[in-house]
View 1 (cartoon, rainbow over the protein chains, first blue to last red):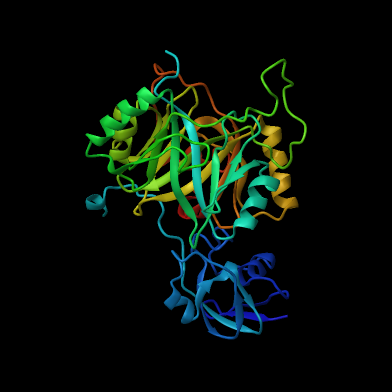
View 2 (view 1 turned 30 degrees about the vertical axis):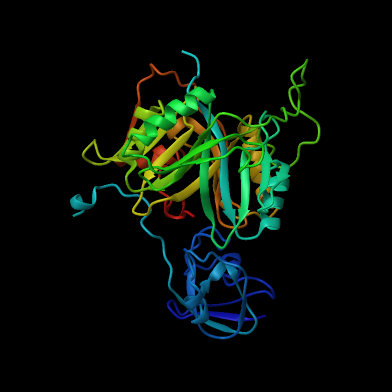
Length: 106
Length: 310
């Protein structure tokens, strides 16, 4: 079973064979990579794979450009490790709702 | 006053990353029925109690989200009248007429972009297939239902920047009413607008965001709380990506559960709400109470629910 190391938090966990980086983290009750739609559409769980080989399933081009994909960026919900991976967390919850007009932001 | 002008949400076109996965989700998990495919590969679906040919269209693409949202109006004359008003308004941009048949089983459509960046269209004519119980001495529900089995596509919630402009367009040109609104600390700045063109608590809603043309969720209606719990069972049974619920909204009073399709578009199935009449005052929610406005039981904000859109 491939081991995923989240460099930001220092935590590691084991993914089952064929399981995505995000699904493995959630199944073990770990936190670190933000969890969004789990379907490659919203971009919240964006990571950079620093080392290790993986298979990437189709993910939204609006979230990951071709150049980013070539540079090891991807969505954790669509990345299946082939071997141990080291990953950096890139994505995060964007502030979804605007409660103030832009000029009133303190 | 009877429902005239814009009648209801007619169809929503969703972009999906994998068409087969999406068709499985919308037909077997949610329980819509496939009614056609076109030469672009788009798949057309309807719910069991809907009369018209389709209400959901799936298109495979390299990103998730919404292509456009169509509204049925009561006549071709109303379509011409509203199109002329929209053409004359600075609130509607990039207006275009689509010929009959460009969308399967659908008459001519007038499409435009609203201030929040979404593509909206109006049409008056669509072929009918009839609801699955028929119209002569019908049973209350048909055989052959599967999945969550909603009776209708009900509404969508959309995110964008200029919700003031979009509210003005829907209210002043299309004749919608503002059933509920969410306002900021000054009591005026509009954060959310829940709009109805019918007797429902909402037919479409808009939330202020810093990004335009975003889809928050597509919603289907169930018959009651027990069906919402049944949908929750299906979400676990089918290993569907759960967002939040089952719970209740303060806004619109709906009983609800949220989940994601395989491409990350958020879906809702819900029940309840209340009956809207045009002489009912608009409900106002203040942002200090936004937790219970959104999730009445938890009474706190859920970051993923607010932040995740496609």
